[in-house]
Amino acid sequence: MGLINFLVYLAIMMGIYGILSLSLNLQYGFTGLANFGQVAFFCLGAYVSTIIVLTFDMPFIFGLLGGMAVACVFGYVIAIPTANLKEDYWAIVTLAAAEIVRIFFLNEDWVVGGGPYVGGSFGVGGIPQPLRSLFSAHTYPFFYLAIVLVCLFATYIIINTLTQSPFGRVIKSIREGGDNLPQAMGKNVKKFRVKVMAIGGSFGGLAGCLWAHFHGFISPDQFMPLETFIVWAMVIVGGKANNKGAILGAVIIMVFYNSTRFLKDYIPVEAVTLASLRMVAIGILIVVAMLFMKEGFIKEKRVVYSK
Amino acid sequence: MLRLENVHKSFGGIVALHGVSFHVEPHSITGLIGPNGSGKSTSFNVISGFYSKDRGEIYFQGKKIEDIEPYKIAMMGIGRTFQISEAPEKMTVLENLLLAPKNQIGEGVFDVFLHPKKIKKEDRKHLKNAFEILELIQLHDLRNEYAGNLSGGQKKLLSLGRILMSGPMLILLDEPTAGVNPTLIKDLIVAIKNLRDEKGKTILLVEHNMKVISEICDRVIVLDFGKKIAEGTPEEIQKNEKVLEAYLSGSSKRG
Ligand SMILES: Nc1ncnc2c1ncn2[C@@H]1O[C@H](COP(=O)(O)OP(=O)(O)O)[C@@H](O)[C@H]1O
Ligand SMILES: [Mg+2]
Image (cartoon, rainbow over all chains, first blue to last red; front, side, top):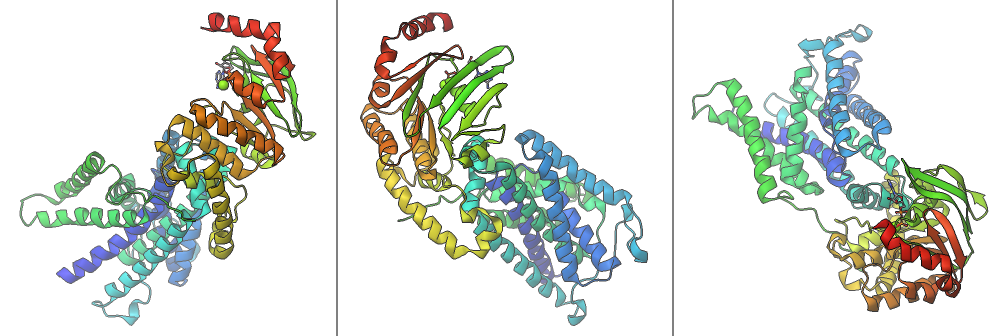
């Protein structure tokens, strides 16, 4: 793989994970919802979009919107019964929910509507890339990068606008004071939590869709709980409750994640060892961030109003 | 304005409210006093819906308050502060104040994108109000400081500020002067009186400082062991045998 190709690939990954990171940052950084099942949204977006485009032969944009919609509904649905749970229970419930989603796609290998969707443990291949025929093999990644960047930018604008609005003030107060204070101010805390999960879900689903159509192949083992861990690392290292920080975190972690692949040129290690080394590297990065930069690279911005 | 009838509340074996009945007149300042553990904060929590009562009835403006979620009670026009001042630590003083107004347009997800102008206008209106309140609670210089960096007394002032921003009809204040420095207490007293006299609000407050009580309360209700033991003007209460006894025995019996 040439250097340019590699850099474009890396940038695409940064963009997709940047969206995931922004989504988790809205949930955890701003609202204090410790979602340990972020990968569920990613997985749903990837599968639903794939099924829509591949099985039902619909255009990419329908896959994208459908993936977002299903992940949105999923966020909404898991939040309703759990919205009043304490943080630790919340973590367990979301972790379990994500595994259920993954195992569902692992075990369901039906053929829908006579189409070619054959999932299960074999995964699904041949996922079409949008407007692929208009580009050469060499230029297509640049086009895809443009799609990803547009999506990342849109996600940033939407989430950033929300977090700076009165809506953002309420979710921050939920993060800070638990339920009592916002409730005493007449805020329906549960409803805000559910909304945040639904919005977080939509963007998680968007990332999943972009991921599936870039790689052209998805399988359940790509959506292990480890993915959630990587996204958490991005939020913590980049700076929680700061949207630029969430994107920077995705950039840093992706660099780390992919840098280990060059290690094998210098140190004689096996691929399997390398894969676990990556996780060790990210783990160390989290620990270092927590010790020396508690608030991550970019701190939460203090909101200053002037008369 | 507010009426409690035979309200009971216990926590496991502890009976916190044992058939409490009292009422609060509109446009009055009513004091709720009693030794530690007599059920004052529990009364507040039951009224504002943070605890569900075991038995009894509560009426607000003639309407019975059912067991509904606290935010709904707040929406009806009952505002409260907490004995231990809760303040969103990593939000500034101004943010805290701007959080308080109810039903802000910008609290709706779609509204944020559909009505940016209206939201800006509304925010500006709230901001203007907030700056006036900042003067009153003397936190103007700290307006962009995180609430977590305020002293206990300043947090009390901030919770009063939030109440002022949200404009409820009935205001429940749980020990508003505890930890507030004496010179500020004078201003607080003026501010609370103004709420009644100029804004027509009704106030129920828990307070330990008898000077404050005699200075601002129209009526005082005394609780002991979850029961009302006396009621009257501050002068009457201070002469009441039962009240004196409750307070004197309070320290030894309750440790
Ligand atoms: N959440 C709770 N759980 C258990 N006991 C409580 C709770 N809240 C209050 N109590 C008990 O109820 C009684 C009344 O407490 P409270 O209303 O806080 O008194 P105070 O008059 O000092 O405000 C006390 O014995 C207290 O220990
Ligand atoms: Mg109390």
